[in-house]
Each structure stands twice: as structure tokens, then as C-alpha cells.
Image 1 (spheres, rainbow, N blue to C red):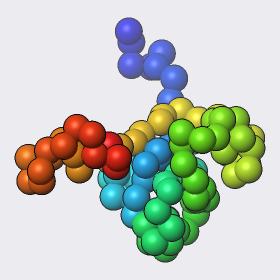
Image 2 (spheres, rainbow, N blue to C red):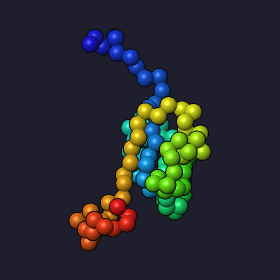
Image 3 (cartoon, one colour):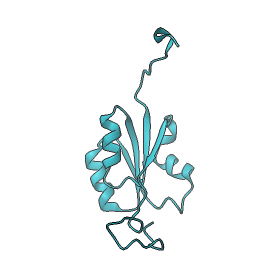
Amino acid sequence: MIAGEIDTLDTKPRVIDLFSGCGGLSYGFSKAGYDVLLGIDHWKDALDTFAANHSGSQVYLGDLHSEAPETILRSCNSNSKKIDVIIGGPPCQGFSISGKRDVEDPRN
């Protein structure tokens, strides 16, 4: 492909972060030029930190297992914008070599 034929992005790619915690993964994506629209987690303290670190982003406090994705996006108005990337750092305490490594750990 010829360089002049490549389409350029006129906006930053838009991201939502599942299992966002305090927003470390989102921070990396924002530093790489992405627009973080939404952080989702079930831990309120972590989301409070996420909100402080990502003032232009929305937060959703809830369990991803109990609600439909459409409900979450609708409540945060993120479905009015195109989402380009979905990122997430799911809990892995039960799999980590620094812990007891219990695959039945409810945090997994």
C-alpha cells in the first residue's frame, strides 16, 4: 500500500476497560493516544480512584456477570460513541504464583 493512500484517524480510538480497578491499564492506553470512555468494576474504592485518574471517563459500579452489556453501555451513554477497543485485566488472585494458587478462588 502506498503511504498516501492510508486513511488517517481523525479521532482517538475509543476504549472501554472491563475489570478496570483503579485504571492502570487505561492509563497506559491513554498515554498511547486512546480515549478511555468507561471503566467498569465492582469495587467502589478502585472506581473512585479510576474516576480521579481519568476525569474525562465515566465509571460503572457493578458486576459484569449480572447485567447485560447493553444495560451497562446505555446507563453510561457510551453506546452513543463507537467503541474501537475493549480492554480488561480480570482478577487473577487465585492463579498468581505470589498467592495460594486456588483455582476455586471466588475472585477469579
